[in-house]
Length: 282
Image (cartoon, rainbow, N blue to C red):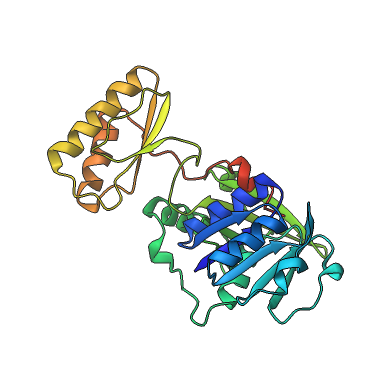
């Protein structure tokens, strides 16, 4: 979908834009009514997502003329004026999954995301989390296109310390007297979204830590071995290299290399949230 995103807070605006682009949407941003009005005049959008209070007025200045559906986001939802184009009103702070659902509701055929699309390391962590639960425990899985949130009700015999060993953003939540544990993982397996990421055929930057993404590459066995050797050399220099989405044909080769050479390149999945997204989680 082609989206116009309007918010005067740069961190929130860029965080949401990054989230939507990762989900496959085309995003144009604006920080005030005037810029949004100009964007609407020269581009046709499939959806407009806008904060209501903006530095030069309220969003109704341009919402009233919108031909596309509008999702209004406000800390004061009672102030949002009723317009034919306003499909939904979300109260701040809004979770990314809730926003993505509202965006999906604006299209006739929402795209589905399946667990099979998750990185293999992410699936392994989720399977390990399920395996540590007592028989009959119920879990939920929420995938917003950037992060996967796994949660279950916290019971006395749940080995929380063992869950912490899986990595990821682990937190305990309490709602209406019921406690739940939630584990959040980056769905593409990156150990940290702020790390430099390069392709296997690109030159590696001279940094303390980086990730090599093999997704979609048609790499040869010899080239893959060369990457392993380079990663081993960097490890001995005190630097780290993470391998993402290793081709299935080379998975056992990578595992054997790690065992033989002590090169633990694939840490447990679970990044720190990037600063531009941190404020979006409520």
